[in-house]
Image (cartoon, rainbow, N blue to C red; front, side, top):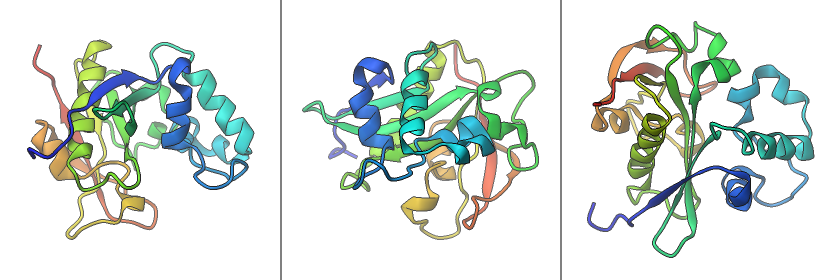
Length: 198
């Protein structure tokens, strides 16, 4: 891991929205429909939003507190990662308890998306990004953090790896509390929990 770049982390606010767009927006055509990490946030209603409405929705989220996630930057200041993290009650998809069984009582924080910038993968950035997401949640007052990473038997392609991979979370101290619903068309997931040291 000595070749892993030193990363710094910053909350996703409107003043760094260009970097949020780099990580979450469409890559080739600005009018293309990209996820923008809204499928979790808004549930089925996200499918009704066109490209500009999705961009605007995320811009508005970045103007709220707590912010919708955290960005990772390398040594030269380039954005290289995104982590979607919020209270479970702020993520509409989590209302589906068959897919996302609660990891604890109450309203835990949940890490639901980890994305490393294209061309920067397989350098250990994802693990550092997860650590930064945990630190962000703790700074916001999290006493329990949940997650639903994939639990593949073999290497998983990036399109299915957005929830993170079980082994990554285990390295951060998360433990499995039970099975979770699979990624649509992809591998199975597990429900995991971390009680950060205070």
